[in-house]
Length: 426
Image 1: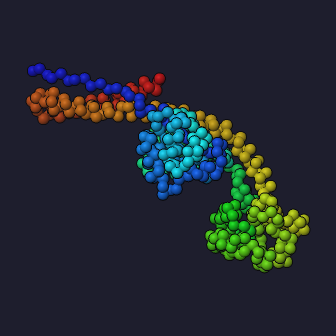
Image 2: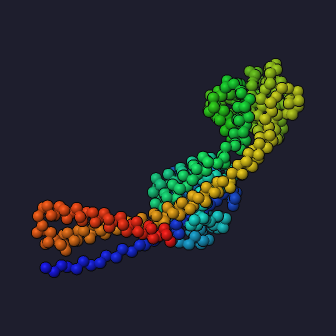
Image 3: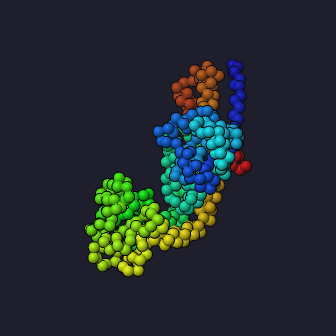
């Protein structure tokens, strides 16, 4: 009996799956643009889905991720187009239709561009905080991870950005675990709290807060989080003071009422924008209410809110912004010493990612093999050898099914292993 000749099936290893060649990052940070200008690039949460989806579809981006923090906006994407000035003009005009032509041109010229493996290295540096305005800022790893999760939920990302982000998060965790990049505090608020904690202040200490701006708000909430509970807020605008006092379960008064406050204090935390001393010797005497024990004044204002004459006359532990800034600078120097160690970890991570990407490239290129093998089996069983198989008894057919099944699995796994070995050797 003549058999129908099976037409050969060609398996072509296509390496288009290597999206690394199409990987790009457009970044705006404190290094290349002002913070106020970065602010214009932020997109409200409720608008992100529509804006970013339109951008992805209009520019035919393969994948897209949007990272936005208080001093950083980055666009992480894959595209087959060349990312140059012309591309960026289209990019920003599409994403920000309300921008003027001058604005679009400005952002297109100011952007920092990273591509291929340089883009991967940049993302690793960002998550590891050595690209941050404040080196060792731990918050950035959470911000990067949340940005990916949000973009993924919006169905903007794909397999490659998933792969990059997995390596990025693992590397950042290793950096924070194996180096001292984030161990010494550098923010004024954090340093002020550590100073206060070192003084063993009781958690029920009477704390007067003068000023309800961002710095004092962060400081007071930090104190409440760590157990302090007795707060009184004085602020020029009563409404703002009441907002902070409500958050602290405290009381609020106008700044004018400070000079008549009579319930005493243990700690004063002051940060206003006044050019004159807010806490004069007369006001300080009133606040003391005859108490003679040592008090603590954390004065984070510039110029300082506490009149220097008070320090000369009274028992005061004065923690000034100048003192805190010196400690901050010292700690930044200590953190900077760790940068080389972090860079070594990142270099190793880049090598690992290149290997991982090559393996994934083979997997994507070979993903059609199992289906092709199944098609060959179906053709052989149902067409080419159908008549011969119909003549077999049940036992023989069962044995043949086992042999074919075994061969099928090998034909799926062996080409994959061989392709990986060949590519990785290259």
